[in-house]
Amino acid sequence: MPVDVEYQSVRAPRAHGGVLVHPAKEQTAALLAENLAVREQARSYDVQGQSLGELSQQARRSLLSEARAYTTAYRDVEHLDDHQAPVLLAGHQPQLFHAGVWFKNFALSALARRHRAHAVNLLIDNDIHRVPSLRVPTDSPTGRHLSTLVYDQLTEAIPYEERSILDPSTFTSFGDRVQATLGDLVPDPLIRSLWPLAVDAARRSTNLGHCLAEARHRLEAQWNQQTLEVPFSRVCRTASFARFAAHLLAHLPRFQEVYNTSLAEYRHANRIRSRSHPVPDLATDGPWLEAPFWIWTAGSPHRQRMFVRDNGTGLEVSDRRAVRFSLDLSPDSDADRGLEQWMDQAALGVKLRPRALITTMYARLVLGDLFLHGIGGGKYDHLTDLIVRRFFGLQPPHYLMISATALLFEDRTRTLLDQIRGLRQLLRDLRFHPERHVVPSDEAARLIREKSDCIASPSLHHQGRQRHQAIERINAALQRHLAVSPQQAVAQLEHVSAALRGETNLASREFSFCLFSEKTLCPLLLDLVRSAL
Image (cartoon, rainbow, N blue to C red; front, side, top):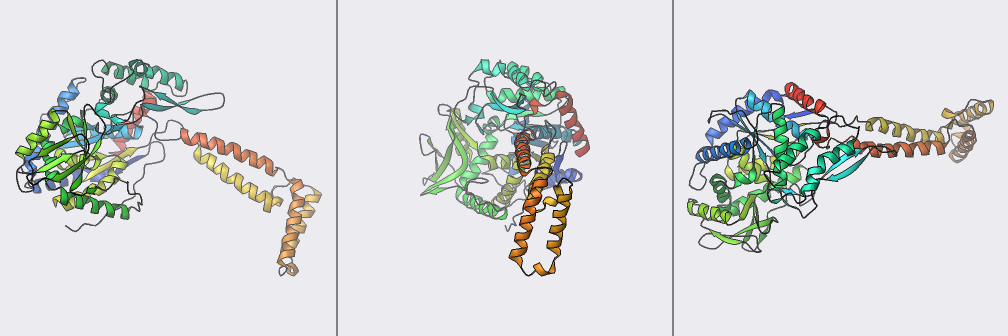
C-alpha cells in the first residue's frame, strides 16, 4: 500500500494555562465516529485464525474486566453497563509525572462522559523505572534553587512491574520531606493529600509504581474523575494479547522489513540523524531476526531484546542468553498451539512484553476506539501509522494529542532575556556610540559635535583608515564622560545571566503535579477541560 510520510510540528504550550488539543476539539466526535466505522470495515482481517473483530471483542471484555477488578480494589468508580459502548484509552508510566500529563487523565474522564464511553488509563509498567527521585524547589539565603529528594533506595534500572519498594522508611517519609523542602514556596501542596494515600497503598502492595499510581488515582476520585486503570502487564497476560503478538512473530520477516523501512522514512521526514531515535532498527543476525518485544524473567528482571528464527517446524524464540523456547507458528496456520506455548512460558515466569510502538499499536487497533496521547507519544505514533498501513493494509485509527502547561512559579525568563538583550546592546553602544550615554557637559558636547562633523565630512569619506582612527579617538575620549561604565554593565549582565539560569529551572513545565497547590491546580485542570474540550 503506497503511503506518504506525514510530518506535523506540534509543540507544548509555553504559557501557564495553555492547552494543546490536536486535532481541534471540534473534530473529536467525528474522529471517534470515523474510527468506529473503520473498525467495522477491518473486522474480517485474519489474526492467525481469528478475525480482528472477534479478537477485539474478546480483548475489550478482558480489558474492562481486569480494569474494573484492579480499580475497585482501592476506590469506587462509576460503572457504564454497556458492553457496546466505545472505549477511550490513555496511558503513561506509573510515576509522579508533570501537570501537563495529569491533564490528560482529566480529559479522558470528561471525554468518556461526553461520548458515553468506557475510560481506561493504562499503567505502562513494562517501561523502565530509573531513578526514584523528584526535583523540589526550595528557598535559601542565596535564592531559590532545586533539591533532589529520593522516595526509595537507589538501585539498578528495571521494569516498573518488577520494581518493589526497597526502603519503606524513605518511602514513608517522602511526603514530609517534600513539604519541608518546599517551605512557604507553595501553599497546601498536593503531596500533602497524595502521600498518605501512597503510604496506605504500600500496605497492600510492595510495587513502587502501582503505589504511586493508586495514590494519584484515589486523589482523582476526590475531584470526581471517573476512569478505570489497569497495569499493562496484566493486559499482556491475556490470550488476546498473546494472539496479536503471535501474529507479528509468524510474519516477522515481512513485519521487520515494513518496520525498518517506515522508520527510515520517518527519520528522513523529521530530519532525525540518530540511528536510535525515535527507536532503533530491528536487527538481523544470520537466521535470527529481532522482534519488537522484550524478554526477561522474574529471577533476572532486566529487559533483553527478543530474537526469533525459523527452525523448520515453527519458531524458536530467545533472548540470545538464558531464555529459549519454541512456538508452533507459521504465517498460514492458526495459532492455537503457539498460544498455549506462549502462555506456558508466562506461567513459568518468562515476561514477554511489547516495545513502545507495539504497545500503542495494540491499544489502538484492538483495545480501544480513541487513544489520547501526549505530545511525545503522538509524534512517535506517526511512525506506527505507517507500519499499520503497510503491514496490516488497514487505515490506522485516529488519535488525539492532549497536553497542558501549568507553571509552578511565574515565568520571569522572558523579562530577564529582555534585560540581557538590553545590556548587550548597552555594551555595544558604550563602545561604538558612547555619545548616547554620556553625562551632559561642555566637553562631552564638544566631542559629540566633533564626531558628528567627522562622520559628515565629505573629505574624510575617501580616507577610510583616517576616518576610522578619528572616530575611535573621539569615542575613547567620550568614555571618560559615560553615565555608566562598561565594567558596571558587564557586572550587571553577569548578575542577570545568573538569575536567568536559576529562573530557567524554576520556569519549567516539568515539575511534578504533586508539588502544586491543590487549591489552584485541580480547579485549573477542570477549567481547562471545560474550555478546551
